Length: 330
Image 1 (cartoon, helix red, strand yellow):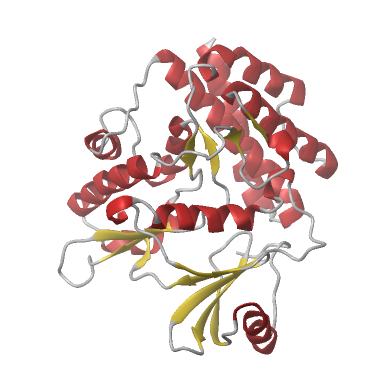
Image 2 (image 1 turned 90 degrees about the horizontal axis):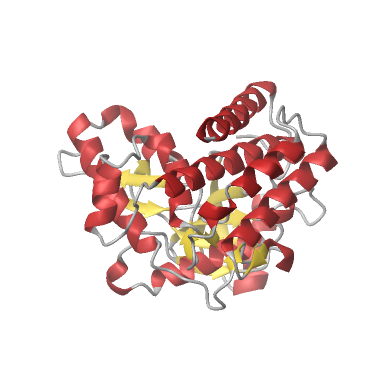
């Protein structure tokens, strides 16, 4: 995916960057082009290990408010996952981290969206159940300071209460929308009113949990289905969009890969692993708010990233449909 936020460097420049920061250089094998925000390269480190190096956007690149410093969020999540007992959340190992780059171990398998054609319905169901269990374990992670919101962004995007933090997250995107003249199709005041009307439901969330918020199939690696063995999830990637919030919000991106309803394989795996998703009216109201938030995010990020008309049309439909879904609750 092409994006104006991607920072491209020559093989020699990447080698020098790593060598200066870590003492270990690299040989670039190829650019990995699936990402939508950062630049990523498959490399061979001088010590013989294969790795993926991710580069943050250039310092002068235009980014959204919540995106400032989010490479630090991704590094934090990899460290926290590594500390979980029993390796309950498969993930690349964080080999090196700097202010503007990460070096990660290489996962086996393929992103789920690229492996999907070779997965049988039964295998898909088993993987969705496994994914639910992994997500429940991810949601056991809590912030050290007890605050909701984005870990690495400006302090205005976090708060002691989820209602306050979520409203600030929405307001930040609306501020960005104004800067980029984003075609929202839903008036900003209407979006704020919809969030305020859901305040009673947001207040039910009293303990912040880590929410990946980008678990579409391209960020989930699977392996084993192509060699006759059982398929399995080998890792979750791209944690930079993560925030401390309501676990229900995770269902929004998980829905891009399949059913996330109360009778789904994913929710069965989630509850079997100890997670709770109660699907009460207030829960469903919050879920509708998180769909609105994602729709807003998708539209607004088209500006600084320079996405084309087709993707912008998809994003605008997502936002208008999410707003309509919230109106129907009333």
